[in-house]
Length: 262
Length: 332
Image (cartoon, rainbow over all chains, first blue to last red; front, side):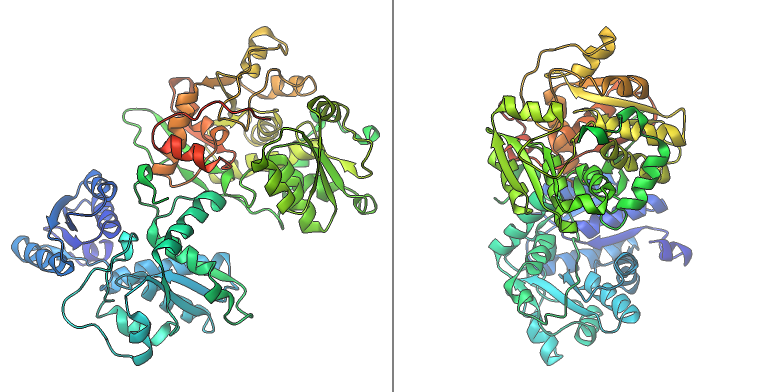
């Protein structure tokens, strides 16, 4: 948002499509920058995320339940109202912004051996991977996803395995539901991420969330629960014993606390 | 070890600065962040000092660390011990384990498993005695069966100095702080923070906070001396007793600007607020300062709340998140 403002690219405002957290972020950033903001969101997104977007002053536009509906509705709105589109992951400035997480992490823990990163479109994972490898080339970047994403296949073959339009995965981790990673993000991940992907079961995601609540005293949503579970998994334990310092990205805490999944 | 007893009134700002240096390898500075709540039309900003994020889930790690690291090496061989069923037991066990020093904890025989288990898990040994015998150990600072150094969970100069490091960190992160609100259990936390904060910024206000089901400090301030008051156990099991400790009264009387008293339902609401808005888990005592900060009595300006701990029973937490107040529970 700030870069677009500097380049005077956004007089009419911004638009995006999002499962919730990017929408909230864009709404907040637009409010800070004093620009109008529209967020296209699936009607089934959690109320807590929708309410937050409204509270930051953005206009919510609900779309259909198919994953592809997000893109088509967003494009249409952008054209109709001449809005600058800022997608949640396939945008260089967004990727760069997310990458700042890694700059802070390595500042605080310079000797990280590996980082576990949840991925949906892959924007955060790309940003962190670029920053991490530039600062510490031998660091290992592991992606964490729900079951059914086929990202490992993608990383191993170097070719997009998905056919047809974007799909949603069936998972309680509503922040990482996209099956396909983006067109900008996928080549970055193919180049920089480890080929092994942590695909977490639903119960593991729930256990990861519960662990953080009870042992770390932090409230995390499903996507972060997946990363937490990956950190505690036998799969990680069985890997290279020299990997002792593991970074875990607890990417978000926006969930309905009145209806916890356990 | 009565001969080594250093009066609590003797703790200075310098002791606290030394404590900070001493504990810096083992205990990390905690985050201080704004409370994520719109305060329409009010002239105040509320901040959270997140002591619940320490490895043992409470601030007690600081005092225990400073205490253990202050003991001369030749005495450390015999180990350390304390009388506590609460968070201090875990604080001492954690730090003793880090240094490879034996640790024993004396607990009253009805101490809940939720408190015994984590202490054992950290490698300490637990000895259970009757409540009267346990209270005797607390008051006399000695348990004849043990050889090691006794560390009192509250009225121990090195523990208070360790607690005070929180005050230094607050002043660093919010140099223009006007008020600090601290939960009141035994008085070790609030007095330590007050010595540090007022040492750095003399006109900062430090308020204790208590729940109306057990508010001995506000009663003592009213009467001008410690008095026995009504004490009802509740889900807020990290603080609350029937009387201010005699050896703590002169210190807290001098250093604290008063006690803010809130209700159980205000505390429960604050627990829910912290989970919802700031995405952190606080136990009742930890959320109490936030409940107090939201009232008019807390005044205006920059208010920092010490979220002292996050060790709440998961079932009680679920009740609170779903909007009810957990039932009465005997506590230590």
